[in-house]
Every structure is written in structure tokens, then in C-alpha cells.
Image 1 (cartoon, one colour):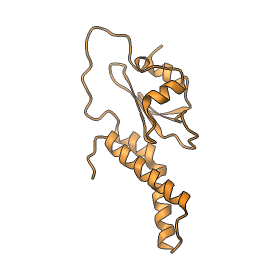
Image 2: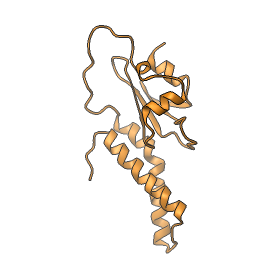
Image 3: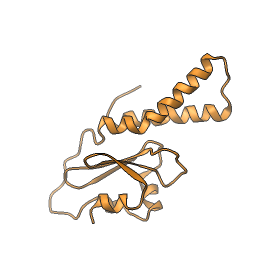
Image 4: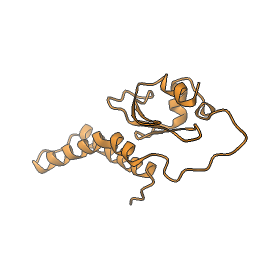
Length: 141
């Protein structure tokens, strides 16, 4: 079984392209798929959660280890990838977060104060957008 098959058999997911998927992060009650997975040309599985949960926690929740993300060794080392996640996957993963920011902005423009829960959700959305930029290799600041 490949690393992708092992991982995907244990999470709710949908394919976004060849060797790319979004998944519902099992470490929290997400209504939207905020995790992304990409299989490299050499079979290594790259996992990222835009919500910020560590990969080790996600793997623990589904009964896998970090070593399960790698195919059996063939005697050579893999070259590091400059941008491990395609921009399209990053944008898909944060589309909902952008709507949260827009809704908060519209409420403020209408003169409606944000509740404490709304403010916390807005801060989370901004945090996830910044994490997505980092994962995509885009400098921001």
C-alpha cells in the first residue's frame, strides 16, 4: 500500500488534481476540508493543515506514523521541493477563510459590532490565510 493509500483510507477527502487532495482534519470538528495532501514524484506524501494542527497529531489521530508518509527506501535521497503545495490547492483550502474575512468586513461597514466569537473566528481565518501563504512559499509581512 502506498503512503497516499494508507493516509487517504483513514480520512474524509476529495481529490483536487493528480496526486493532490484536500482532507477533513481528524483532530478537530472541521466543517470544511482545511488539510491538503500532495504526493511527490518519488511517492513521498506531504501533509499540511491550514488550521495549524501538527502533522504528528493528525497522524496519531488516524493511527499512522511519520514513516508511513514515505515509500520504502530505494537507496537514494529525495531532493527538497521549493514549493511543496501548488497554489491552486492552497487557494482551495483557504477560500472559506476569505469569505469569513469578507463577512466580518461587511458587518463592520454596516456598523455592526463583532461579537467575541466573531472576533476569534476572524483571527483564526487570518491565521489560516497566513499559514497558507507560508505553505505556498509566498513571503508576506
